[in-house]
Amino acid sequence: MCGIVGYVGNDDAREIIIEGLKKLEYRGYDSAGIALYKDGKIQVRKSAGRIANLEKLIETEDLHSTVGIGHTRWATHGAPSDVNAHPHSDMANTLAVVHNGIIENYLELKEWLAKEHGVVFRSETDTEVIAHLISVYYEDDLKEAVFKAVDKMRGAYAIGVVSAKEPDKIVAVRKDAPLIAGIGEGCNFIASDIPALLKYVRRIYLIENNETVVVTRDDITIYNADRQPVTRDVFHVTWDADAAEKDGYEHFMLKEIHEQPKGLFETLNRRLDDRGNIRLDGIHLTKEEIQQFTKIYIVACGTAYHAGLVGKFAIEKLAKIPVEVDVASEFRYRDPFVDDKTLFIAISQSGETLDTLAALREAKSKGARVLSVVNVVGSSVARESDDVFYTWAGPEIAVASTKAYTTQLMCMYLIGLYMGYTKGTITEEYYRHFIDELRMIPDKLKEVLKQEDSIHEMAKGLYRREQVFFIGRGVDCGVAYEGSLKLKEISYINSFAIAAGELKHGTIALIEQDTLVISLATQDRLFEKMLSNIQEIKARGATVIGLSKEGNKEIEGQANQVIYIPECMDEITPLLSVVPLQLLAYYIARLRGCDIDKPKNLAKSVTVE
Ligand code: M6R
Image (tube, rainbow, N blue to C red):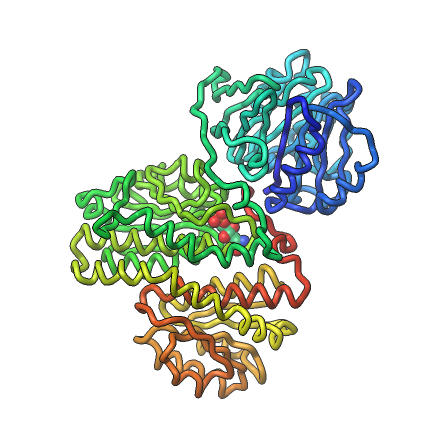
């Protein structure tokens, strides 16, 4: 969470930093601030609320500067107020710090700084501690002072520091929170993520964990954990700048929903060879290795976890290896049984989710092979994995994940198919049929998207509800969880998903006259069972929206309204069935006047525990 941007060059730092921050607003948006070097001083301006508030605050001021840092915040320590917004300064206002992450020992440091150095704190943040700590060690070399301060700090962080005593540089540090340095002509940058710099540079350095980077107009020097300068390959960003723009859509979420056919096409076709076989180039999964795995863990958070639930069905069915799916924040603390015969699959759009990263490290330390499914190239999860299967969703900006989810599903199917075929647990015929079915998905998804207007109409009848249930069986259950999460996170409706067969064990007590239940019934094998579940809730007065495959007309006699997806293999219906649920959540949230791309209390990339 939180976004950092820094610039040293010859142009207007204020404009460049504000532009960059706007591209990082998805990382946090409860307050924002900027520190600029001007007239021999570090000028700090900050404001609660969105970046627009900060812009307004400084619009009439002459703050022309060529060096500065900025921040957009997702509050952890202290309410989102003007005073708690970053940057934070030392007592003499000589330096300013922006920070993404958490300083775990900040209370201890605070006490020490107050007692030993008479520091008087202005904010409730952990970040302010960093500014005072650097100041304590600061003689005439900012980098050295930062090294010493960092030695005292525990936690996960990326920080950027500027000082009036050395106004030609930014010193930045990365520890378990993302940081990149952008290479310009006569100017250089730091940022939390690539979109902030897309307008200015395409060549970047990916800063590694425990590294410090000193950025001046003409130079970027990276220091490793031993404080020695290191060389780094330049990473060339291939994204189109438009990929991070709304492109005429009202919200990023809607644009990203519509980008799914393309994302799925790319994710699939980049893994198929000329003969239509799956090729996992760069991923080391030989027949012997696959045969050796006795267990697979799929570990992730939120939507990525929901992709893992479907992944379990796919891999167990195709490769006949037991799969356990866990949320990362639980996995890492439950002392899971992992050994060198375990394959650990981490799924993450951002590749920076701290819980997922920590779970990955836990599994790796116990000897597991780590394969990650990641969207952001070069992210921490990708770098720390043995092998990476990239999703080709393109940049996902909306906080609510959509195209990342469907491309993650595609990866799950491809991994399962590849393992099953290599191991010989599926026939050649089934393998080819499955791939043919996957190839048809992008076009079928375009058909689903044509229902947008009718789903919008449906939303008009539903948006005032305050409670919704989602039910399903088999893979539909995993999609029910995802549909429910999508609805609650952007519309703030209290929604709840449950396996349809589990309803009668307690939750059915909540079903009463007119309770809305969205019932997924795409599985031929389970269709009749789902019709029985629908009857049970209808008997208690529920209003039911059914979701099924074209041709399953019987559901019309049971449900009040029905959404259809095109005919496809039962195994892969999630690739289609989630999309009407994404659209429904989107239109319900829009009718409720919600801030769809930036829902309250959330951030896109969760880099704190
Ligand atoms: O970047 P990741 O895929 O690791 O993020 C995991 C979750 O934080 C994320 O999926 C979150 O649940 C989304 N807001 C869901 O829309």
